[in-house]
Length: 447
Image 1 (cartoon, rainbow, N blue to C red):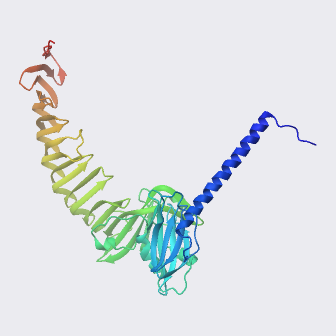
Image 2 (cartoon, rainbow, N blue to C red):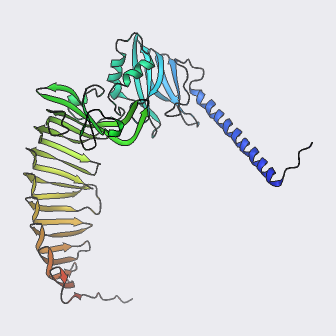
Image 3 (cartoon, rainbow, N blue to C red):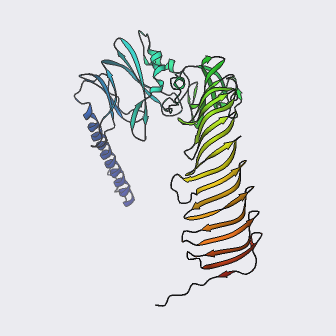
């Protein structure tokens, strides 16, 4: 029996299905072409390890190619004609034993290459950066990898993974800014002895579970003269990764310091200390029995920084501060600003003031002269309040003068132009307009 003729709706539906199939076939053909193009960089070359396509963390193709001077690893997505293979690493005269992934923190997993070289095993680790589409060696993890491989007659991926699961949980790909303290810079952060985990409010957690929110943990690495070299790690506030019985966070180094009582979260520092914010130094200096001494510098979010000297925990002597495009330079005594402080427009922002102000015991007292957007205001403060005659010169050379009493305008305000001709007169009482107001009317110019 013949099928009944298709309705107009069914014909349109059938036509749509055929078009979807055609598009799907075209897409598959395009993918096949791109795959064929990606094969170009390893085609007809001797491989030291089976080809790995579609890497989980990057969708790249990874090939280990035997060359005259040894084995080199290359990776490429090669979806467009202008993409070129990138060098992963030079492994020398080596045999590639295993290539595998493992998570060491809650970010993207780390790619490991286990290889044999000169009758010994070696392990390299790499992280993929989705922003620049490049892999980079995780050098801070290398000491731990060398310890895992040392003296092994046989080594495989499973053994390496078991060893890695026991090291300090940490974002090893984050590069720490050099502190200038050799014993800090040379630390193998994967080692050390656990002191304690701590909650968000620095309370010790003896045996934390994920529900306890372990925001910090501390380890000791050396002991000398009754002091311990400690590292405090901070949990970066992002996602948590659960793999089997492992709960991973994105821990980062928060502080490296010498301490006499490591179990105390803070307060027992004695010696050099460096604090970090996402790998950049945020504070550096020395302590004596928990009190800051000597030169210190600190910064926050590239918007604020300061540097100067501490005496028994208080700022003393010349200091320099930067905040929101402005630098301030002056002296502290007993942690209080004293004398003249200079203000500079460091970032050349139009709304930032330049000039100077005078302090006594951290309060404005004495002459002040500030310029903002071409307008300069000068006068004196008394106990933090404007007092006496204040003069303002505008960017069009007009000059305005008025007296202040207890930080409020008092008496006559007079404004003159560049030639000294009065253009405005006002009267104030306790900061409010009081009395007559006279304003000069500029004559019109006849055409």
